[in-house]
Amino acid sequence: MAASALTFVGIDLAWAGRNPSGICWLEGSSPDQLRCTRLEAVVRSTQDLAGELSAVEGAVVTAIDAPLLYSPERWVEREIARRFARYKASAHQAHHAVRQGYTAGIDLAVALEQRGFTLDPTPLLHCDRGGRFAVEVYPHTVHIRLFGLAQRLLYKKGRVADRQRGMLEYQGYLRTLIQREAPGVLESDAVSSALSAETAQAARGAALKRLDDTLDGLTCALTAWLIWKQPERWEMIGDLSGYIVAPRATDA
Image 1 (cartoon, rainbow, N blue to C red):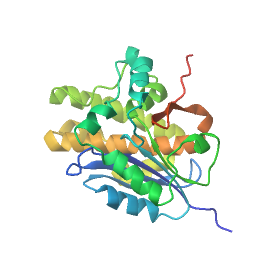
Image 2 (cartoon, rainbow, N blue to C red):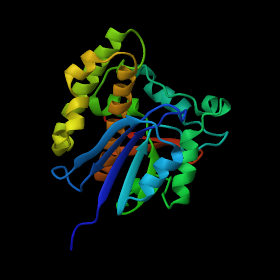
Image 3 (cartoon, one colour):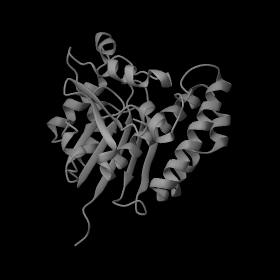
């Protein structure tokens, strides 16, 4: 009997629907088999994304960089800021986003839950490997703890040259992580392009933002894979009022 299909999706979700989201799909069940079948930065509505994900056969783990669960009691961003202050990393406040009407992550979570996805990461973190999950992640926590950084990567803001320098660092760390954890992913032409130094050095304006989204989407997909592969290395920070799944600290 053929092995059940396994799909790991990463989404760097745009908070405004008119903007592109970074989207990456990985398929396979072992480090040698895992392949990238989609990597792009495109405009997608939450309903389109939910429809695409629900159409996948077999187990699915989707890691999304956007607030998924929200209530006025959500406190996870404060805890992220406390734990990662020394790395100069903090997450955007979901309360602020919701007040401004940016609810794309919440809308996507509702649409996915209606289609049978589990938003609570607890079963996944306790080795449930057969379900359909959507979990919230934050790339800076992944970078800091899996790349062993002293501070967050500086690729989001600033002068073009400074952002390009941050992108080059980001590409190098990602390439090393993929070589260690899922080398077959590097066979993808789209991944090769996204990790190319020439791509970062040539990027300006919209192309620079597109590379930012693409690399974050790839990071989220790798996060989905690694949570499924080694759940004991991950933790839920927060609770069901709002949480972020992050790598466990190894220097505690």
